[in-house]
Length: 213
Image (tube, rainbow, N blue to C red; front, side, top):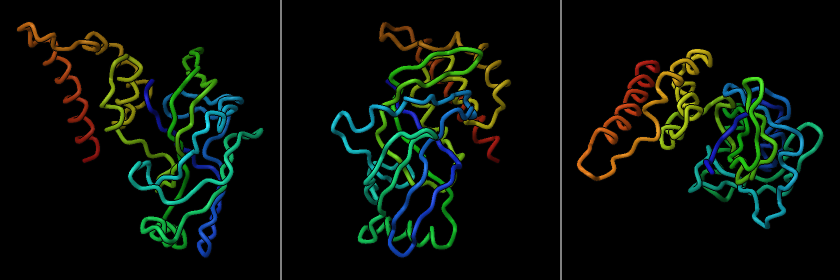
């Protein structure tokens, strides 16, 4: 299963004096840039596997900055409440940035366990939540994460959206480029598969760089 991220510009609040923070890491019924919709019940199993949901800084697994004391699904979405730890260097920085109004949102890292496609959208029915991060940009999705695992037409479409294309344009280009997916160098003296795979990803990287510039 592929590890995914999803960011929401939802209401949340934090106390810069104590590091206390609470809000929604995800909301139900929202159609995001990728055409994904999280359904009620998607987070029903949170906490049932005995693994504690981590609080990270900008999705970096090497930078935990606090603890989530409460993570639960309610009628609106995924509610989280916890503490950023001022004794942690990144935690202190996060608190300072919150006090200055420089941090804008929360974001979740998860694996999809059950979903279905209909009407051009993907409906997430069950997800395995791993972490909820404090992030700078609620709408930020890093293209590098998608480029590492382009195996299906849908993955390619997501990568192109990350590069800045509209959903309609990404869908059209992904449909044309799907013939290049799934090819790997078989090690039998036929380099074409590996080159085509690498060429596709390099083209996306160049497109991303060009659009950023």
